[in-house]
Length: 266
Image (cartoon, rainbow, N blue to C red; front, side, top):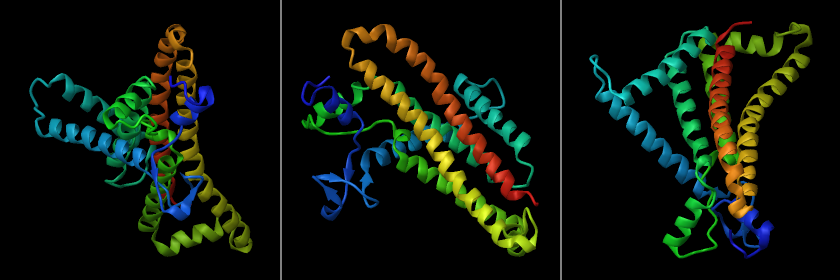
């Protein structure tokens, strides 16, 4: 733990993103506002996605119908699990839903899993490599609300396009204005629909962000204990494995549910 800034400085440093922005968007030298790009979130999430899905594609190309390897067994287990959830939950017809669900589950899981690495290990290594001991860098992308909101908004637009494609423009607009109280109460129906559509991406993103941010905060507070952290770190690490898996599963399941709701007629 760096002594500079004390406990508050240590916590703030670990919760600060590496951001770039125009000078006009800076307040006291810190990037704020919409046009700030969090380079650490973009780099870590992008690299994890490329590595994991590259490995999965490589395993798929080498898949055999004979005796499979352990890695092939694991990938088939994950794909089978997600595919079964899609079959049980999604009642429409779309070739997009299963690949989307697999992508979301695996990607969110590996991003969450970065939280299992000791909080000072990767930042210290990066600072030593760059020579900048004040360089902020968050290695858990899902503790950044910008990423979770981006993912949830992407799910929202995909479900919107799916609804238009499956139902057609006329039927889709009829549902917007006539469900659930009929055309005579179209303004109220429209208001309810707007609130419902806005609430979905907000709740989807904040659920993932809130749980992962809280978990990261607990790890940081445990790290402040120095050597006394050892009795606490391992139990929380084991419990956190459940959290990161559950949050990836919940994000995937809600995505499937939203896709199913978009494809169903009312």
